[in-house]
Image (cartoon, rainbow, N blue to C red; front, side, top):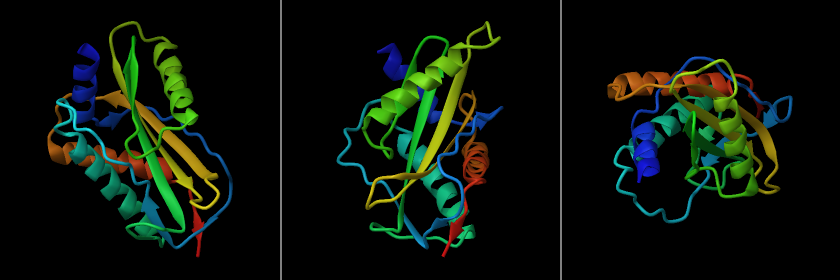
Length: 183
């Protein structure tokens, strides 16, 4: 129950501030003019997930604005590339992945473990909470990851909606700053 409460609170307040940890998969422009988000199957609604959809909407709006500025148009499905993203929240003890729009492959567990290691190593001694936003650009035909980048920051508690949106926008722009497209 404590883990579910922690996940719910972290999702409800996912505002990222602090340092970044970028990862880049491929270099060079990606040939695409449209994109679509990974489409999850039916998701059970957990009791702690009351703000989960708001956070997902904020992330998707920020990604859509960023990619539109790069010349990509969002389509409901069948885009030239698929955008998948995952949120990992953790503290000194545990880590949880919110992968509704990422998928359920072995990558998820490896990335969650990598985040936990990063959260627990270092000079911090007191209790803290961190959030990682990871975004993949995927070729939907081959499932090859064309670009992967992430950012890890401290999580703030219960920020106003406009502050949450601004920080999510900033995080998304930082994650996608290294991705370019050719049309």
